Length: 369
Image (cartoon, rainbow, N blue to C red; front, top):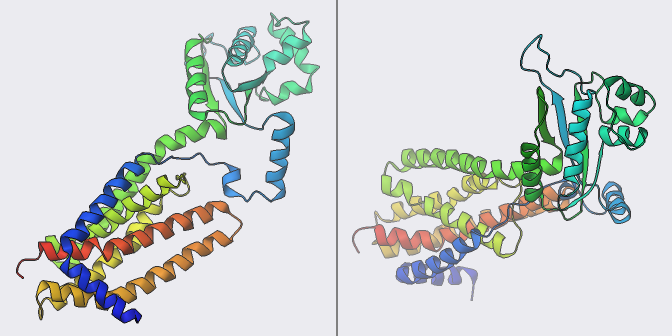
């Protein structure tokens, strides 16, 4: 049987079995919806951007195997007086500040996933016969004898850091909570500002920002698409129905991504807008041709002819897009490969929605026989 005859049979089947098509699509969509709820928002570091076989990644893996990991975060203690000319602390080397840094570091050691802590206070204590220096002059004298102090105290003596090493499989969300609680619980000297820094601690914050950003970009894209559709078709019904193509297509995409355990990260979060921009074309082609055929045929015949006419052009467009997006996987950057893969899933899903649910819903909503 030729390809044209297969398309003809499919077109006839869809136009005559609209309720069955909608029923099957809804079952798949409900399954995809519940799967999408379990989709993971993954963290992203250099290992996610680069292939495993390049030297820098292999070296990092070697260090982790030999020394227990390269993951770390920092607690940053900064001089931040509120009033000019006040007697607030203005030098990070004050004994009161050194004691506070030491207390923070020692408390951090008891947090799960922390493998080690290093700070200026720890170095000074080791240099001072296991006692923290009690005067600023003593801190200054000890600092002159150690080049390591410069790694933790800035040249203007306004900032100091505590480096906290973490296990390789640490829980980044929990470590953020634990360290934040630690900073809030331990009373700090006046005029100090304490914060967290480091890529590993930034990832949970990025993930929190990711959801509203995805919502914002998707909303703007959707509004723009709706405006274009309404202007193009000059009909609320025909302007909104094509949105089913991208709505169902995106839901199927994220359901499938969750099902295979792929997840998304900050680099791939913008694919929704791109899928919407490309996938809506399938809906526009289908509904435009359907409206043309309605002037000569009843709605069932019009849809059968419409699918016959648009199936191959849309299939060709889909195939070309799949080849282009999958070609992104050929590069060295794994991040680009993941983005191309998700885009491929999205375009394929929109195409399937355009040749199943969209024709069925157009027939049902069209008055007459």
